[in-house]
Length: 191
Image (cartoon, rainbow, N blue to C red; front, top):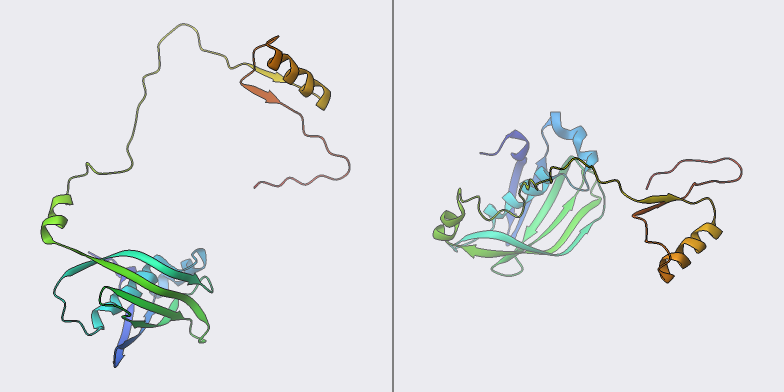
């Protein structure tokens, strides 16, 4: 069952083959919108507008592929959207913020039919997961292997080590440590 954050469809109306809708995050979740390009609950609510498109098709359809998806702005907590059906198995979506500025454009979201048997075959199976926990066996021995490493202080030592490894005079260490030294003021930057 969807929680309150995924019940964002506030209003919807049709004009011919177009559906317009207003969607919004609940007040207590609006501040979290800034952490997303588009909040997943808003995107989900936008897809709920599909239910208002004129459709005689009784098939169960699941989203399959986004095409021409462009994010124009990030962090919206409310959207006004326009949904049309370019083909029988797809929809196009335009989303705007409260000022009318574009937020998201999707040229198409293609849907594929799925049968009840296909849905039932995967329910509760858990065997098709791409993720899992693996506990590799660690050999029990009295010695803990120590990785080989070498500390070098300048480019000349790096070149010498490289030559010695290439000629077979020494075995390549698992790690080489070089001190990072700069002249003048320094700034740490993590990327």
